Length: 140
Image (cartoon, rainbow, N blue to C red; front, side, top):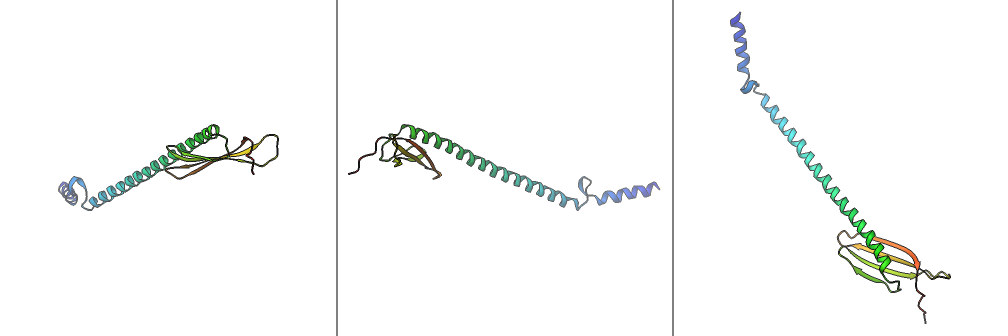
């Protein structure tokens, strides 16, 4: 009986290859490695795409903040004349226009428009306000 049990163990061990695996088990390890590699590469690709989108969003938010500050500064500092002024900064091209509203009132009211165009993204930003203005020029 002992001989029969020993022979069964020998037959079982000869069916197994290196490290106690069956000969067909090596294909499963390769497939497992490929699946793990695919999952890892997809995770990296999706992470990079998310980082790029976050960077674009941060740049756009920074540009919007810069545009707001520049529009407020231009509205406050540019002279209130009826001929438009234009210029550029490091990030924007801008124009400031002042036009009378035509309303008959005790005080001259003008519409003042500040327009910006970003140099890089070509986004447009506008600010329009009503303000007091100098007397309208006499038309001949």
